[in-house]
Image (cartoon, rainbow, N blue to C red; front, side, top):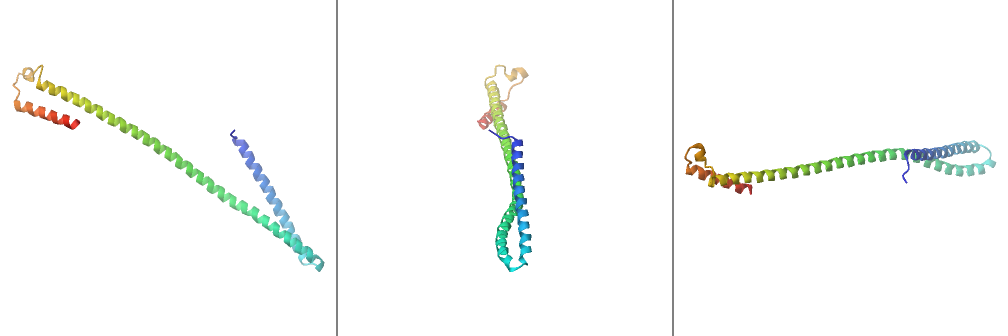
Length: 170
């Protein structure tokens, strides 16, 4: 079951709020311990033992404070880098999809062009066959239509050129 955006935002805000409260609490306690430690440090020998104990506790507080500060200063740049990387990945995926779509369109156009060329070649071959057949055995010889005598060399040359074109088409 997918979560919707408002639940996601609420969870993020709640997590950030709890983390911020924890960080502020650690900061306040550490500052209080630090101030108290320095106040005790200059007093009598009886408080030297208390100073040592508070100094040890302060080390743990400063370690926690360092971890919280490190978290905040490390998290923000990391999130920015992650968002930038996600944006680049999305852009790359979009470009890949567009390129693939163009490639498919080009392949279809190429296949259609090849089919059109083959169809035109078949039509041209058929036309040449019809012309050749009419020249070899004319049902209505051109000499009667034009009232001229066909020249034998011209007819032979035309038939040879038609045969040559048909060989090229095959």
